[in-house]
Image 1 (cartoon, rainbow, N blue to C red):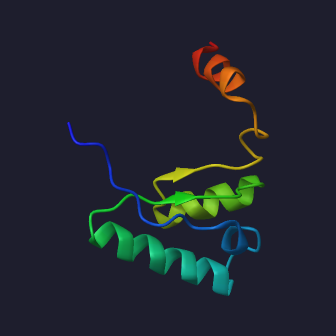
Image 2: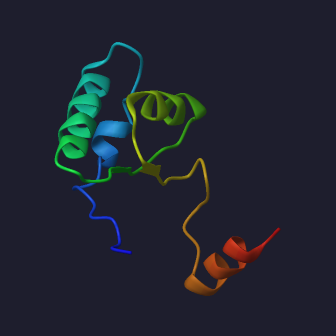
Length: 85
């Protein structure tokens, strides 16, 4: 199995002002569609609110990261988070 190829992430400067009917949402949607048409996966950086997460899911974003999910942690703590039930 070939690992997915990622497009340049949707960066924090776009996601931090994400709101319904915003220019940032229109830009995010355009980037997501363009990347997916090229067979790429999209990861959004800097997701801090449930509203941002939902807007990106609705737009078809493949992956996300940010404080909504977890603060930055050292690698050993990250492994523990992944294996925690």
